[in-house]
Length: 220
Image 1: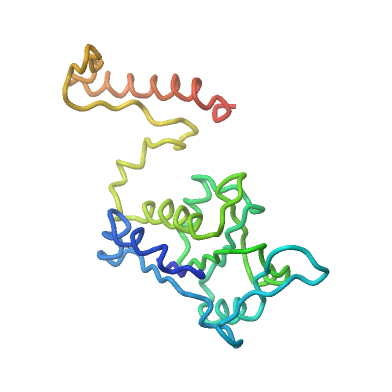
Image 2: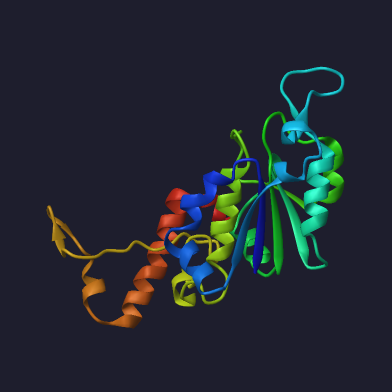
C-alpha cells in the first residue's frame, strides 16, 4: 500500500513515521508513506496556499489551485482521496478495514478556516475522527495511517487482531502479566490453569461483560 499525506506541516510526522510498528512496516516495504508539503504546488509569491473568504468572515481559506495540482500530480487509477475534516464521516474500525484494502490513499490535511468548497469535487471521501475541532488535519491523518497500516497483512500477527476491541462488536477481554499477586490483586485462576478451552470461555464471557458495562451501544 502507498499513502501520500498532503500537509502544510510535514515536520509533525517525523516522530510518528520513525517509531514502532509504522517504522517496521515501512522497513519491510509493506507500506510506503510519503509526506508532501502542498505549498510546493503554489504558483504565488511566498508559496501562498490560502486567501480571505469571498463574502467576508474571519480567517483564511485554503485555495483550489495548489490542492488540485497536488492531487492531480499524485493520483492514479488506484487512488482514493480522503479529506480530513470535522464535518466528515466518523472514522471507525470497519472503515479502517475497508481502507486497508486500497492500493493508494491520498490524505488531505486541512488548516485555517477550511477548504474552498470546490475542492470537494476532487476528493472521494471526507472523514472525521470525532465530534470536536482540531487545529489541523495532521493528527487525524496519523490516526488513519496508524489504524490502516496495522491491518495490512504482515504488519502484525493476525492472531493479535482477531479478538481486539471492536471485532465482532465486542470489546477486548482483560489481560494480565506478572506478578501473579500485586497488592492483593490476584490474576484469575483460570488463566493459570493451562486449560485453553476454559480460558477461551472465560475470555469470551469477559468480552460480553466488559462491552455491556462500557459500551452497551455496540451490542444493540
